[in-house]
Image (cartoon, rainbow, N blue to C red):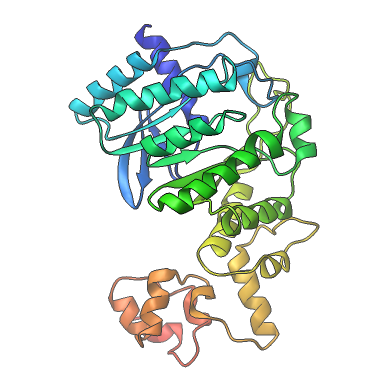
Length: 342
């Protein structure tokens, strides 16, 4: 396989999100991401873009694709690693055969990579594959993922005539969850495409289930963008601002202890307003005469909330280099903002 085809397989990897701030370096053909709080230069690639599935938002099932071998991809990653250009790998694939055959090729790539690389490895779980393959993927990889893509079985039927959300994806997630709880040192993620007819409330309900019941590490949000050669090429692209707010919603649920009820209280017809939901919920609580916990103060992240709990004042926090502009209006018994102006 020539370098041009390999570059297309790497470029196609951009649709699988591995971090909310993952960026592609087209010159080095690697993705800059994070894993377990550390920066990773990620070799993120598809084994094939030739797909038998008919997902209406994805070009792989609607045009001629390219396929590489596990040996070629492992060899390329070895070269990138030796040159100091990549220190982690993410292996995925379009479904160019039956699910078990495709999963076997992903695993073979993982086996070859593990012969020379003990660092970060992320393997994609193929919808519909056998349970034995999930076991081996978890034995090889630091992280695995299987993408939900959407929020309900009925919506999945509108997107694909092949995939079944409950059987092919959510049942696999439950298997992954059960095995990871026993292993303890692995993680798994999933992804939802925003802009295919679902509401923010639909996504919130799925997020709650994924985090609380299935132990998913992250639910990533992919913005729908219409692509040529697909049945959805004439649809409107989803707004970036909605995705930003969905990630804000994710942080409220995952990191800051907000309940779905609190988040839904600022929604209108199932959608978040354009403003930051954390601010709206805080304003709502003030209006109702309720106290606001430090974690739920706008502009106050985990680190600053711990500083406030330890007794530090806003002035001390500001002197340590943190912005207190947003939070100053919500922290009681502190100086007014103009008192900090020198």
